[in-house]
Image (cartoon, rainbow, N blue to C red; front, side):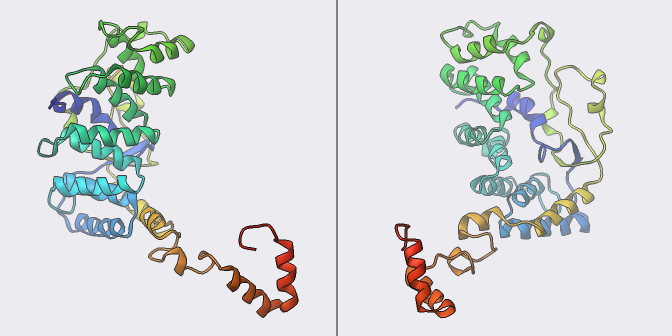
Length: 313
């Protein structure tokens, strides 16, 4: 089995933020009563079926926020979120398989990364392309690398130009191996000269605390690009985590869980469509009985004539 841990950790260090908002707050180890209370609240909403709650709960297990660190439980929550359609859950499940030594499984990681990529996660497309291009990461497959890197390029992924510059130094970067990517570049060329120097974050970047995001004001070096290397991804860190967690918890109270919607066939928590008024299907006889009761016998014939030829009439 290939070992992806060292460099993949660097590559994905900046891709572990909670969601795609502009600002973020750090989540890390915490055993205070307030942290335990938040953990219990998220555990409740995760059980109800909110995928964002599952992802947040997984992060809490991962970093020991309000609970003991537990990588297996973190993975379980990420996978649950992935199961119910969370792209964040799919992506982070892959990252767990890549970056956690006791859980390392590149095949499963690739499987979840593909799920996220098919759900329009361009980060996932980019990482898939890298892993298939370089046999130090996974089984080399230029068809797969071409497919995923082309997708990342066509969607304007900001790391693609620098990586293309790196690929140009390889004997494998040919028209035969990468026809789609070269065609995409020809159709929409970019200036690669500015990417002569490719830099990566320093060692240990993969240990940066993950982030929960909200619409806070940016006060980090991300707002001052000149203070960082051109190609180094910067993680914005804020300290108002309770406010952001409260905001997310409030959003759960005014929305419906993804798990409930998929399992019950209705948007009513805990009830199937068959048991929900105005959702369950009505048989032809029940419909006629209702019309007869409210409008009289003549109305049944009128309805039947009006809808003749339609299903159920």
